[in-house]
Image (cartoon, rainbow, N blue to C red):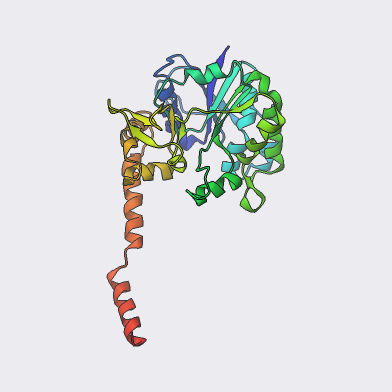
Length: 315
């Protein structure tokens, strides 16, 4: 079989995975979609909401691949690290049946035809997605510095041909050795390990399409612009292929910092609800933003206390 898209989740995020699959199937109704669930061994019969062509994989099924068993044992008590480190294991597992595998975090959502990504794997062994944080230190120093401590590439999207068995195994083996957030040593879980792959392996290439992995960290390098027909382009050229809807990304859109993407997060919200995710993500974001606003607003008691303190100090 030629291709499969996959993701890794805990049971609580099944609705997100199904929403991702729905977004992809706008352009390929029969696209195989695989979900590795790391914290349960079975699903209730109606869990997939009637969606067809969804392969659910449980952790025990992939442990024989590469260093899967060792990763599962080492990170058994660290749910997040377990999911992050199992990406190359799942991809190699699927390569037993599929020539091309694309991994995406469940909080990705597609808005344009991604067919070119599969085509690119005819020539490339692996595709990595740059963060596209600011490349100029003087423009956005915080994001510039993060390139060196959180990675040049985003671990939320990796595509690989079956030819890429060696870089995938190197990624998995390095995750087994170290998979921590330690910016003092340039370690950021599975993600910073991607930095070395284009150097040590032929055929590992960065994606240059700026409409891939649109996120709040790349607002400078991937400027959102409104076309005459109302569609949103990146840098007045690239259509949005997929957006990475982290919590901070959603909050930025809802707060008005990234206003052109409000229709996109609305589409995501509606698809998540339809897929069975129980939370209205826009309402939840509004609640978070209001809580932050209230926390930053001095209460009457604190204002009186500050005034009395100033009086006591003779100010």
